[in-house]
Amino acid sequence: MKWFNALIMLLFVALMLYATVGLPDHADPQAPANVHVSPTYIEDSVADTHTPNVVTAVLADYRGYDTLGETVVIFTAGLACVLILMKRKNK
Amino acid sequence: MIKLHYQSIIVQTVCSLLIPFIQLFALYVIIHGHYGPGGGFQGGVLLAVSIILQRLYLGNKISYQKFPPKLALTLGAVGMLIFGFAGVVPMAFGGAFLDYGYLPFFWVHDAELRALGILIVEIGIGLAVFGTLVLIFDNLVGERW
Image (cartoon, each protein chain N blue to C red):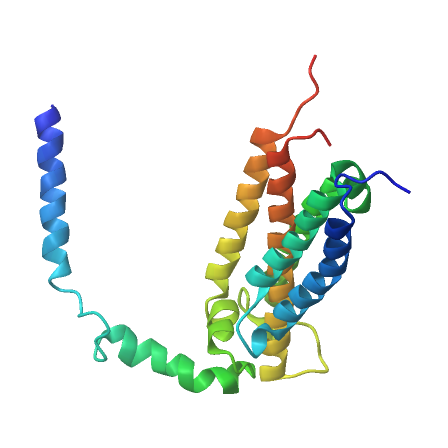
């Protein structure tokens, strides 16, 4: 059974290594993300949001859903801290 | 004269002078997120640091009276609610989720309205991060509150 699991893991490693062949090179200007999304953000963000800081415009406006998730994660971590660490009254 | 945690006059003076400026800079970082580096996360951390510094030099007993830990929990939840309402309220006015162009501030339009929506969201993030970090610190210190 252990060898069977190891074999499956090796197959996954081989699959992932095979998949990386199809990825664009690092910082390739012709990569799909760099010819489609990034120029739109850089060109349109000031006209769309009147925000000179493109990072803020992407973070809070174009990708607001992502930021909502991040904030929920942080707040949930705080709540988990309260639930685990809070001193309760001893009986 | 109240009995402080640290009796050193230098620590007291430096901390009490430093805290208002840290808080002012935190507000600047949150508000100025449109124009420079910064935003809700960074400003919220700075606000939390000012409260944690106060906890360190005043001691828990006095600091809990000045800023109770339950207030941190409440502020964090209020920050999350602000972000949530910024997402849900545009849906009631005909937009999509988190579509700030449909927020009900009728005296600003289009791009200005989106900038205002970003500001509201940043304030919400700042409050949530601020409350959460103070909350984690208070629980790690481990005194009953």
